[in-house]
Length: 173
Image (tube, rainbow, N blue to C red; front, side, top):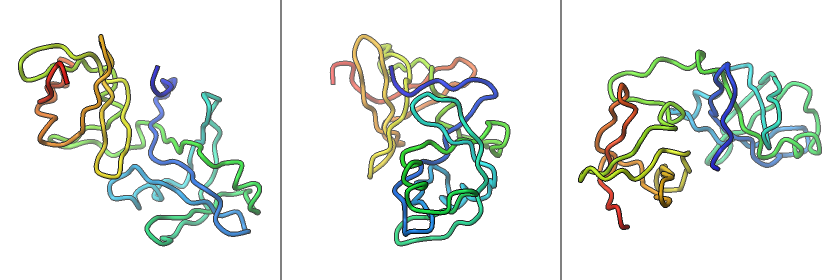
């Protein structure tokens, strides 16, 4: 059900490795940080795929490429080795992330929150998030599944102490 829950120390997905780039072991990288280049401030990444144990790698270099980024990891010297890493999650330990301020929240911190709509109906709990070209979408699981865009129009309130979100989303949509 949804994305795998990662064990303590709490690991947060900050990016994902894409296709190999060139013949010297470079990889395309999708960053989930804001701004995107913040991903490359961490020199030690944990890579994980398919629920396997995360393994540590060292980021050697990174640079912009087209509309995105590419990175070179220690020990990945050729295209085939890079291709085997495609699709792996780039994780960092939660305590390595900068503290949030004001109305900022990390998505991982919202997983498990109960979601109610503005009329007070309980829709379910936040299961995970999906990135789309327009914006992130919150996947809510309850009696049924809801896909709610994470925008100011739809996400109205976060009550962190109560572990509750209020959304402007109809129960029967």
